[in-house]
Image (cartoon, rainbow, N blue to C red; front, side, top):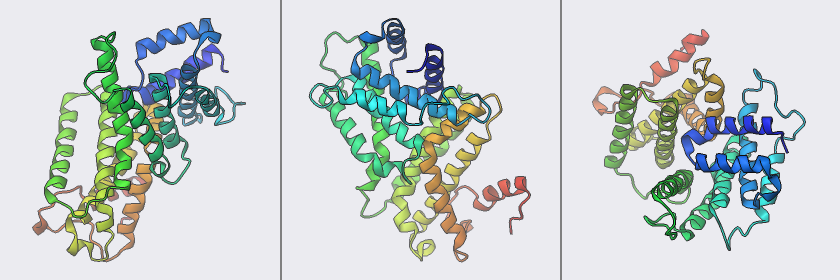
Length: 335
């Protein structure tokens, strides 16, 4: 168990990196519960303790991402100890028979932990069963409906539960393309999605968003780019994709480039926000990996074009210019 000072720092790091964009907690309520825990730790329930220790773990992981410039808060604690303790407390609860919000939040944060720890080549292939369980438990409690079965809930509580349900849907959405591939592609839906992404980016630049709002926009942009990439990738990998499936070919290239640009911007953030931005970027390492591999396939095929012909009417991200910028910075020839 960390000291109160260290525990508060870990929780603060979690809030800066994860909570400001994902909104799993009701922060005012959690802060009150935390104060009671520091005063009377033996009175805390197992479900809440499971939540607290997975938060410690995520805060520790976020801190490790910037440990090159900061002193390690817990040098003697094994990397997964907090996660194992959280799992132990979770096993002591009535997970299926009598679930509660603390249990749902703990499971959600364990999905985030799998993404941050890099347990597998793609976090999604090992998380779909867990996200499916979370959705079913949440539905059993009525979180998916407009009214929750508790007349004591006020408007603020209803709003909090609605936000939590949306966060659960965000975690579950990336797993859907794994078993629901479309039989055919409709150009209309892909074009509309790309248009919405471009309009959202323009609106964000004009509105001068806060740091939390900007990171939420990055999070959603990466999500929808990844979904487009997942849907179109089987068609884009065809040997004759530029001619047979031009929509999928250019969509995959555009989405891969856009995701990698987000990675470059997060890692190249200004010094005052760089530590948090780099920790935040670790949440998307599977997306960055898939985008890198996708782009590598395009670069390895000498006969695959990187810029669409003017007659195609496809106005995606200029691939050669986008790739040339980091090469110029590094002093590498683009030939």
